[in-house]
Image (cartoon, rainbow, N blue to C red; front, side):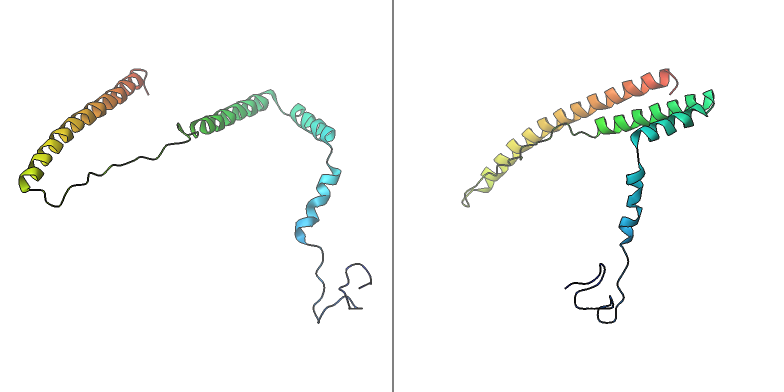
Length: 146
């Protein structure tokens, strides 16, 4: 089990079954960057870079930063759902006896149809109100030229 670093157990040449040992994994080759990183030096480098820029470049850079942060913030705020938890919808089913007559079925269908007409009118009124709100918003935008 002994041997030099990098040798496989039981081999004297560093090869196991004819396969050469691989070098260090490429994922670790760039890790030396963090050993040389110093926050103060990075800040001074940024300061030196900003000092070498013209005034108009700094203004545009700041404007681009503000626009980017604003858009990102708007997406983050707009992506939160209104309700995190929505309780399950329970649907009740009526149980009818098999001995119902056709007259009972027709009578129940008339009652159900009347309820459906009332619900459809309510839904149509809600849809009309939503369309009116969108129309008002569109008219406001048209009034300012958008």
